Length: 142
Length: 451
Image (cartoon, rainbow over all chains, first blue to last red; front, side, top):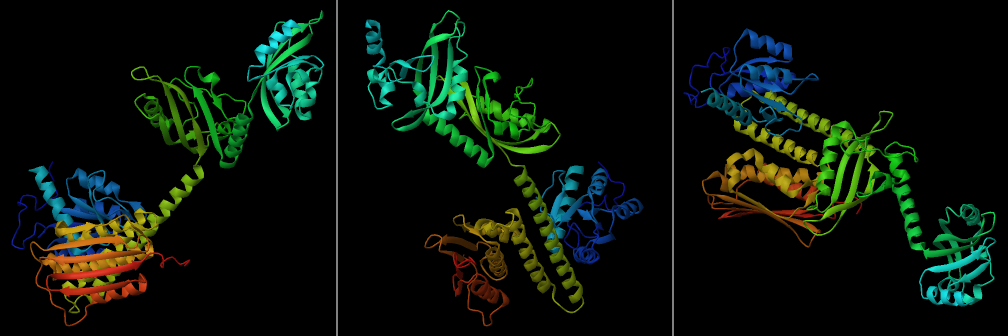
């Protein structure tokens, strides 16, 4: 597995000067609710990451993915009535770790192995989940 | 005459009823068991007409069946009522023609009868119950094959067949009406129940296909009877009932969908509130710590909604509420001991209890026993007296030394007011030097709006 879109791929994922694996990581945000997207961007910035997007549709998210590289993604299950499963499959194919957020009842790990975060989430829960999926990706690809 | 006396000595000793009669109904002979039902002795029956003991409404069917007796086919079994001194009773009669005239018509026949009043009553009850509850019964003798199996008219109606239709089994040994997607699970249930090592009980929900393509949900409860001892134990007979549960299944599914949707909306709204708060207080010198406290309270509120959704809003157990409340606090949860019986709280009780527990956990992780290594929290609850009130005890130990705070914080206020106004109970907070102690007493009956 490799990921040609990942600009920070070569850097080892250890704690950097800010004390977080998330530091400087480009995280694509896919969320159709503007206010929530804005909040998630703030949370990512506070966690040291670089938010990319936010994208409110699957098409928009795919455009971003094809145009610029990202290290990880946060995606809502439901995008204006459209499920984001197709996007999750693309991310999986490109070995880009991601966290799913949802207001629906879900177990914390989906059948496809994706990590699920229930809404509403705190900044710490979001950054923790991202750090976990990033660390997992690094373990499997090393 | 001698012959009659011999016959009498034999049949008077029998418990079944014996009656010999001519084709016009005159009794030539009846044993004591028969006569007793008329309040007489056997000898006194001779010369009487048995038709007078058969209720008018049963006479046509009995007449028709007796008319079938011939030399080649001299036996017929008839079920009809018999008017006795103790009231009308159901009997099954085995009639055998004994003498015939030169045209071949029978002239003398003998009936042997058993009282089946109880069986008929049970059958009538069963039919009544089957109609009232809408269940269809069946009985299969595995040795005799399917032709001998019994399926009640209600059974056939449920599976979409007319009463005269027969149930056909396919190569898999299953009735053809079972939905293709559920055949494997039904086959597995049958195999498991017929295993001589099992209890023989069957409980399964599955779909069936009516001939018009309609899909119905069926609940099946059955029992397999075995005979013999291991290793020669074999499945002998199967019986049970089915009932159509399509309506409740549909309602269940719709309700599930609605509750999921509602929960989704509640959580989305809470997330919007969180986003609004962040936007409103951004760059307004509101410390990040305060914002996180607020976010955590929202998360606690969302968490208890999750617990309630899992129970279809029928309430949540104390255990589920306590576990959910602990979730956001991560690894310190290992130092929390939760214990108590299964108590189901209504949604109205679950939400304030969750919020109270959240405040206690927040305080413990910031200032109390969970803020230092080795500190512990014990959360226990019990009913006292049983099912009258719920006592919740919160006890911290091995934490930093505690002293009464100078000012009452929001957490303490929330605990006090939620306990009193929302739970209609009482609370007490004790800032003991060895650790915080909190007791909450909730009346369980008083929260019932009916009382």
